[in-house]
Length: 363
Image (cartoon, rainbow, N blue to C red; front, side):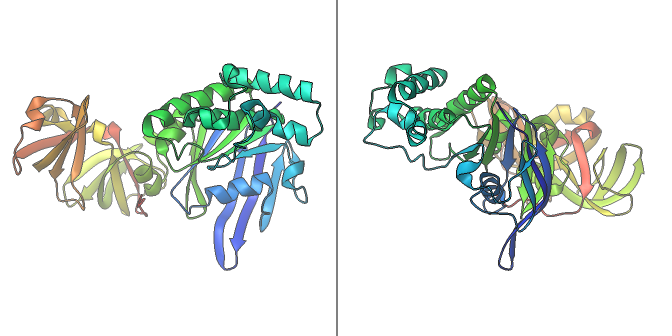
């Protein structure tokens, strides 16, 4: 069983500080939903309000349509996994998984069976009698998930559970978490500052900044059609050109910047004659001869390149606040460019978006 979670006008204040501001959101039953944002943006505060550890200053949290006011954490149909997994080192793995059932008075034989069933789901059947110290970091993560599932939650809450793992293990655990969520059908609400985690695992993502939910959408929508400058600059890399919208024609517009006048898609809230920002992803930037065929062209000076294996990041000075970045397939010619060498760059109007002037992400 899984349940819908609804936040209705939810605000949380700590004295004079507003951590979460007027959030309206419905997370569908059985959905993998991620809150994505930098440290201090309010995402963990939202998780704690859903779990019942703190109450909203204003608004209502509903789970399965039921108002959660006055209902403590131990009475809610939720389970919470923290960054610190808090496994019991003196208990074997199966007892760790079954701990919540023991607290509820479930008989030992039934606890053992339920623990083994869940260890099968997380692919740790053969580890039931091992100690926690014998497990790898990823295996411990899976034990924590199995323990949370043991009490049959309708909503699973995960507060940056992969942050302490190394890159390879994090990437592996993303797939594991998604597989477990799809197999169990439980509603997962995931907190992260890592865009890779959010985009890889989630059905939908909510991007937060300074307590405000900036945009909600599927990962592809968040990346390709950002609603605000913060979302455009926080989710993925972007080259940013600041200027003024000179003219608009339906879904397309021209923006005048110090680097030049460019044509791009008209984003949400952008208006003709008003200050605006143009965003274009590095992978959409064309280089060298390919730039000549692009509708928007720039003559820049090459500064440096970063070899990343199967691709290379090429940086150039185009008069922006920071070097322009283009991402291309690995090519020895790009790595052979010299500092200051003229480098034509370009991009197509459909690959760029114009948004109203606004704050950029700092992380």
